[in-house]
Amino acid sequence: MMSRRSCLVLAFAVTASCSREPDRVHAFMGPTMGSTYELKVAGSAADAAAAHDVVRRELRSCDLTFSNWRGDSEIAEVNAHRSTAPLAISERFAAVLDTALLVAAATNGAFDPTVKPMSDLYRAAKEDPGAQLDPDASASAAARVDFRLVTISRSAGEIHLQKSRPDVELDLDGVVAGAAADAIAANLESVGVDDFYLQITGEVLCRGVKPDGSAWRVGVVDPSSSEGAQAAVVALPLRDAAMCSSGDYRNQAVVDGEVIHHVFDPRTGRNPARRVVSASVLASSCAVADACGTALMVLAPDEIDAAWSRMKELGATGALLLLPSPAGTWKKERLEWPLEDS
Image 1 (cartoon, helix red, strand yellow):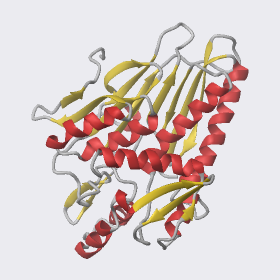
Image 2: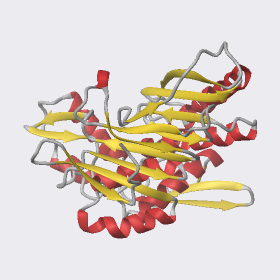
Image 3: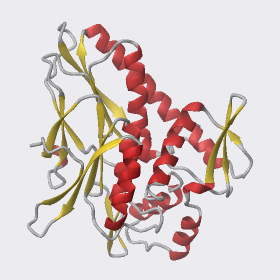
């Protein structure tokens, strides 16, 4: 499953080989969702290896459920269901879509899981930069994008999804990495692994502490730094919480003479008028932080206060927006973001 963003969070931690124990940090990395994952476990080598197995198993399950890049995934089945008749879905799928719909409602559609028709237009334009965005195609796509066109019902132990339009299609890339991290964390804690750092496509979830008792430390990437030498704009300790970042600076294209990026306002089908270069969110749930970061990329200034109040009801605790400034640095807009960063 391809991620819609690059790795936007930096981690600061001492790592060691899995051959030494105990009280060491054991580190693992691998590819996932068109990007990478990273796991750091404080504990024994055996516990760390078991934790890594949990991560790989959960990521495989997420790929089979949510990947829009394989024809046998559950989301592919949902999107191929061109009908308004109820369709049975799994608990895993329903739980992630539930979160997506809650964030969509909280942000008045600034985050929207039905955005796939617009995402498909962007991807096609990026592949053919000389092409123009067809206004008719854009209007047709916009008519199919509205989170209120999808509902979930539960009855007698069964879960069904129902579309109000048969041609509605889902894209959950903006929440899946965070949801995977939440599911992995729950599984790790159930087997007694309490101290770990987990990063999936740049979305970070930390539990417990490092062997020396200090918190895991994470940073928000400086958008002006290169992918090969990323620097942090701010850094802060993270314990029993998630931090997720969305950004527009790694995934851009010039189409019909205009620079466009992959973060569309689902309500207009266009890149937002105000350029937020990156949005980072702290939350108890990684899925909530993930989706809220995407929404904050497109919300207008006069929408943010009301949306932020509703995001906090879902578990968000702080947000940091980076905007261009005339001085060539980054203007920082903080929404209850902790000041103890560096």
